[in-house]
Length: 64
Image 1 (cartoon, rainbow, N blue to C red):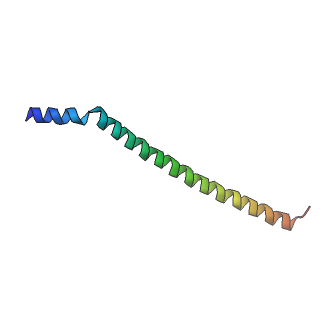
Image 2 (image 1 turned 135 degrees about the horizontal axis):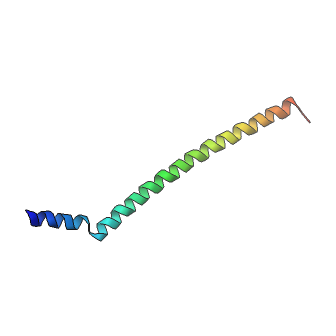
Image 3 (image 1 turned 180 degrees about the vertical axis):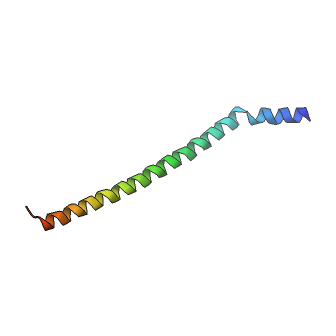
């Protein structure tokens, strides 16, 4: 029983498995970062377009 437990423990810390787990974590974190940046970019684009439309309305109301 102890041998089996030790073997499982040894394999759970095998370098290949640790590298795979690390790669998965990096992929997951990078996906979250990029999706967050994409959302922020969309929000920023929406705000910019709102500001520009307000500026157009202002120009119509108060021409130079």
